[in-house]
Length: 201
Image 1 (tube, helix red, strand yellow):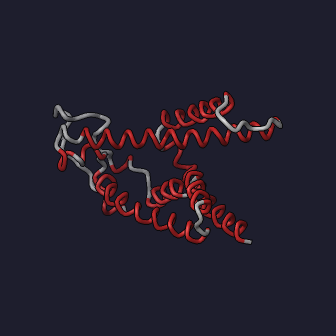
Image 2 (image 1 turned 30 degrees about the vertical axis):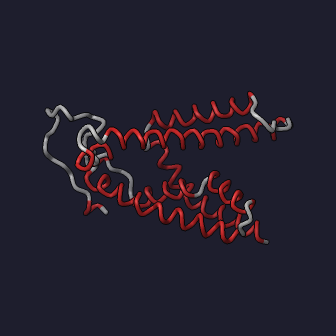
Image 3 (image 1 turned 180 degrees about the vertical axis):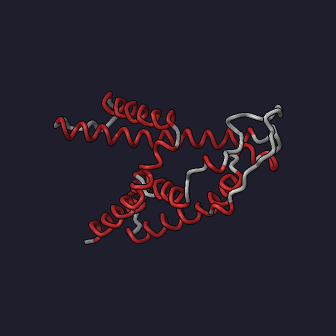
């Protein structure tokens, strides 16, 4: 993988389009290996929304095998455009808004960038709400309080707590969460396999 990494040496800091946030990342600062990228993919694929989707499929009449195959194929299919979309960024160290200028133009790239941001915000909200519900369920289990079926202050408090936790990692950057991704990926796969075994026995 290191042989495919290219450093852009031309000084573009005087360009009016230059920005520190969009500048190419130097090879020495590209610390995410193939394993790190694979681990983060596992973290995105093996998550609570995936479990929820599988349960909805089973509830709709599908078998657990059909649900598992569909989810596996969906994650596999979506990996292809993700890898193709991210390959140039990994190789040259430039982000999507810069790469997209060749296709959409200097100003046109703002539209797909905005679309990506909106989708990311929506998905972040979904994940944060589910994480907040987990905090709420843990708090109810510890305190012995029966969880509320509808919206409640406790659920919003859990959401806020989980949101604050996410803000910490966003503020500290991706390096602060990389170690967790590295170690959690095999655990997530193992737990997923154990859940399948538990559900079928």
